Each structure stands twice: as C-alpha cells, then as structure tokens.
Amino acid sequence: MGVSDTQRDVARAAASRRSNTYLRLFATLTISIILHAFVDMKWVWIWASLYVTAQLFELWVTRPVRADPEARPSTWRRLALTTSPFVTSAIFGFLSLPLFASHERFAPTLGGMLLAGSLLNVIVVNGSLRSATLSAAAPHVIYLLIAPFVGRIANPGAPLANALWFAALLLIASVAVASRTLSAALKAEADAKEEAELRRHEAEEAVAAKSAFVAMISHELRTPISAILAGAARLHSEVPEASSKIHAQLISDAGGLMRTLLNDLLDFSRLEVGRMAVEKAPYNLRQTLADTLRLWRPEVSKKGLRLRIEGASALPRWVAGDALRLRQVLNNLLSNAIKFTDRGGIALRFESRDDGVDRRLTITVTDTGPGISQANLPRLFTPFEQLSTSVVRQHGGSGLGLVISRELARLMGGDLIVTSVEGQGATFILTLTVEAAQAPEAGEEGPSIAGARVLVVDDHVVNRRAIELVLQPFGVDATLAESGEQALELLGAEIFDAVLMDVYMPGMDGREATRTLRAGGGPNRDTPVVAVTASATPKDWEACLAAGMNGHVAKPIDPIELYTALTQVLVIKARAAA
Image (cartoon, rainbow, N blue to C red; front, side, top):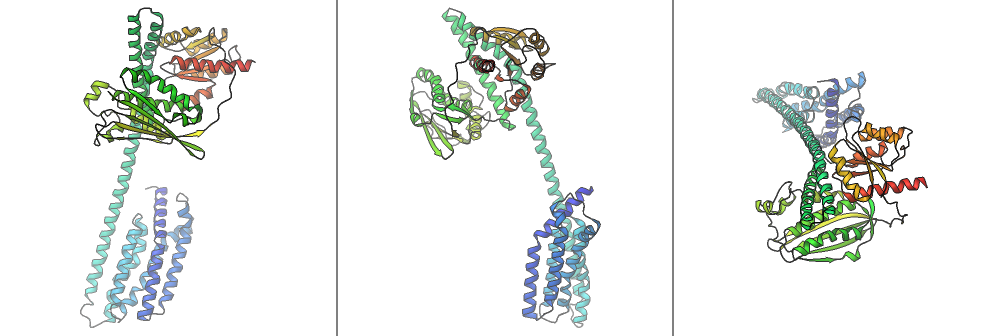
C-alpha cells in the first residue's frame, strides 16, 4: 500500500471517528448523570471533562487530514493522529476500574458492559485502518486483563472472582474474531467495488468500440446508398415511360428505407454513448407540423383511413427548439399508426401550455388499430424488440424507432408514453419543452445556385458521381477532385463559388485542406466550404467550424438539404461581397 493510500485510510478513519463523536459524547454525558445520581460518584464529572477535552483535541488534530486526504501532515500531527485514539480510549475505559472495585450492586456489570461496548465501537469505527483499531483497542484490552485483579481485591471471598479471567479472555477473543471478520468483509466490499468499476470501464469501452464500429459501417454504407438515391432520382426525372418511372421509384423507396434503417442504427449508437444532442433554433411550429402531416396524407388516403386534427390553430407559430428531431419523432409515430391501422382513422391532438419562459407542447396520436396488450407495453421501448414474428414479416423495421423517439423526447425536455387496450387501438403521448421565439426578419432573396461553379471533393468515385448527379438538375457546374491535395491545386488555379468537401479522406482530410485553404492567399481563400460527412454530430460540426468551414450536409445526400446548404453559403458570400 502506497503512502497516498495510507493517508486516505487515515482520513477515512478520522472522518468515521468524527461522525461517531456525538454518540460518544452523548454516552459520556448519560453515564456521568447515571453514576452521579445513583452511585453518588461526583468525581465522574472530572472524568467526563477529561474525555471531552481529549475528543475536542482529536477533532482539532484530524481537521486538516479530513479536509485534504492527499495532504501529508507534519511530524507532530502524525504523532498526534497515532496516539489520540489510544488516549481517548484510555480515558474512557478507565471508568471501568472503579466500577469493578465498587460494592454497589450491578456496578461491575456496568463496567464490563462499558468495556465491551467500547471495544465493539472501536472495531466498527476504525475497521478500515488496522493501526487505528489496535491503538484504540489496546487500553480496553489492558483494562479487561486488570479487571480480574481488581475484582478479587474488592471481593476476596467471592467464588466467581476467578471466573472473571475466563470472561475477560473470552470477550477479548470474541472481539478479535469480530474485528477480523469485519476487516475481511470490508476488504471483500472494496474488492467488489473495484471489480464492479473494472467491469463498468470494460462495458464503457465495449459500447464505445461498438459505436465506433457502427459509425465506420455507417460511413461505408452511405456511399452506395447515396449513389442509389441519386441515380434513382435522376432516372425518375429523365425517363418518359411510366413503367420505368415505377421502377425508378421502387429503387428510390428501397434506398430511402435503407437510409432510414441506417440512421436508426447510428442514432441508437449515439444515444448509447451519450453523444446525441438536440439544437435550439427558431422555427415555425405550425408550418413544421403541417409539412410533416402533408407527407403522410397520401398514405392515409391509400389505406382508406380518416385523419383528424385538433388544436393546431391554438399553437404558437414561432418557437425555439429542434424542428428536425420533432419531425423525426412525429414521423415515426405517424408511420406506426398508419402501419398498424387497417380501418377507422388516426387522430392528432395538439396542446400548448405556457410555463413562464418555456412552453409545454403535447402531441397525442391515437389510432384505431388492434391495440397492445398490457404484457407487451413495456417491450415497445426495448431496443431491437418486435411484438411478434408476424409484425417483422409483415411490416419489417429495426425495432429502434420508438426507443429513439422516447430518448429524443427526453432530450427535448419531455417524454413519450403509451396507453392502450387490446382491441381498442393505442394512444401515444409526446411531450416536449420549447421556448417562445420571435419570427426572424425577412431577408433578401438569395442568389440562385444555377450556373454556380462548385468543387466537389471526395476520395470515393461513387460519392463524387452521386453528388454530381444531384447538382446537375439545379444547373450547377460541378468540378470533381479525388483528394485534399488535388482540391488545393484546383483552388489555387481556378475560381469557384463554393466547395463541397468530404471530411474524412485518406492523406489530407477535409478539415486540414480547409485550414490550408484559409491560411493561403489564393483566389478561393474566402470561398464558402460545405462539409460533407457521414458523422454529422455536433462535436464533428464544431471541429469543421473551427477549421473554417461554413456549412454541412450529411450523407447520404438529400437534394433538398444540399440545395439549402449551398443557397445559405452563397447568400453569405453575396452579402460579404456587397
């Protein structure tokens, strides 16, 4: 055991003795009152005063050690720390000798009880430090060995006087066994805590490794998914035949499903390691909800269901929160409601309550589906859990949607709960907290991205071609570069309106390339750079921002998100040039 460990044990023993001080002082006062009142021992108050003085001295000596366990005490203080348990025990236990010598009835019994109780108190209070236990117990052991002599002198003709030897030795042996048992129990507890901490650390490392693996696989899968979605969108817009458009839409739907499953896995991985975060920005709440519902109306009509909406007109227009995560949760609730409802309808009820600074938003989604049994309700929020194999066969899914939705609701200051009666549908209640916000000032109309020269930098040829396919319908002139080094060469020779920069590339990555661009003096030093990354977490974006990037889009590329990002950075560029 090192010096620092010994010091910590001393500090723990001192803290334990200090917490026990009030009990010892109360016992001293009680004993003094009893002996004064019933045995007429007036001098007992001298004994009590000495003991209280010793206790106060011990508290004063141990105060720096208790305040800073790592501090090394001075030599005299270490000596005082070592001897103070012995001194206080010697003073307290001394009272047993006159009690053993007393002819008052039950006085020797009281003396024995005093020593036995003191010994038990010593091993319990000082159990974590053997030296303190031995120091505090030694006076009581000595008094127990002296007690038979005192008893025989005070009662020379008593036949049981010699039995005190056996009783004293038996008590000492019992206390020694108890001390060893307590020490072993404390050591086992410490070992168990250390083992639990080791297992917790290993579990955290395993979760982190799994998260890193999911992130890596996600990054690799986003490349082909981006190409599938971009190619399907281009095919759908160019082919004239209705049958070909149907096939293109089928490819697009399959790619969208793959992207949804991939996003669920990545979101769940971030939630597991505590890396998921929600943003707080002003958005039009009514417009966000209307846009979300508009997407699902065709699905509702296709199944012949009714969609009833209540309370939307009473909602505030502008609030501050995370519109993207709100849409994600609401999309999942509507998707499940439509998926499991074959007849009847779906009802949405919106409520808003003012809590002072914040607003409490409640969204209730009720369906007329088959409902959920009470036994299955807890399984809804179990990762990768489906209620039955028939659900998996008929509807598919990862079993993560509701788990992620509930965690996102909690991150947004609310919760997601469900109530249901089997055969009578289900009701999901989403609550979240938003802040009141003002509508942003209307800005000037931004420039069109048609005709803009954009440099696309990505080490994967499929990604470069996918982004090029997305940009072509917007009238963007795309130039492709396969590395950060090649991008810097092109940026030093030609003028571009914007750069789409992959963040993770072998050799010079996107952030390093951006830092080099900003530090140079070429014609594109101030050209907006948009980060393109499959790991679009707040931490990643902060690193991109620190490197000099101006915006970001996530893979797989969504055409609307890409268009919005390019429009925003070109607006900033136009204002800076004005």
